[in-house]
Length: 360
Image: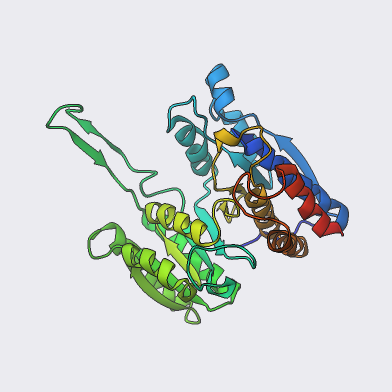
């Protein structure tokens, strides 16, 4: 849920352009925020942070404590992408992305799965009214927080262990957020728990019990349960049955990629990492796309969608709705495709189209 709108309507926004095409799409997101500022009188104070692969290769810096304290003091963060082809996988992801989630306690991952008019979906005969749901993923526990290791690595007797850690507190605050969000969304008021109670006897049992117990406080919300494998199938066969889905970290990571594809691909998919009692970070979920770096071919619409989510979170409802309307107009009337290099426009031209739709 969003925060209360500031009385002076001036917000301190941290920019983390990051790696690859991240700086390009952040530039377009900022362009849209500046247009919002001019039209609606909302103020934005931007502070850029040099975090990512180039910084790590230059001086070994990942996420210094003083930077965390600066980020903590801001109203929201806007991330481009983290991931560099010359840095071993896992270093930047764990050292920056996961550390941000842990340090700022961004325990909610919010992922809208919405098909806009005019956008292609690979699901036959499905229309925008059929694909309109939210995935709420626990964002700071589970496999992220678990331990593990190897025994006799590299031998025929090798053992690999990976643990998932789920606390009652972590599960309960995530599920409660999902109930509250479902009630406020006020669409179908239908909340689905995604877990695997038939196999993961301990982790899924905790999620299921909390889910059922909290329902007493939300009798107006209809609930159901689905195993993760079945839910993946139904997301493809009958996505119209879903309103809000709540799930653990690992399952959420998987099903939101399915969600991205059925809503049109990574070119439109955005997400929020939220601490309802603190601040939040919004980002396109497509990654750094290094092969497109500097070519002006990457689609910035996912980053602009992240800006729209940020405005909604900040309580700037009118501005958020204006950006959403502009996105829908551009993807329906102007773009040939959401895929990089196939849009019919350059990265900056797509940003200009959204600004024109906002101000024209």
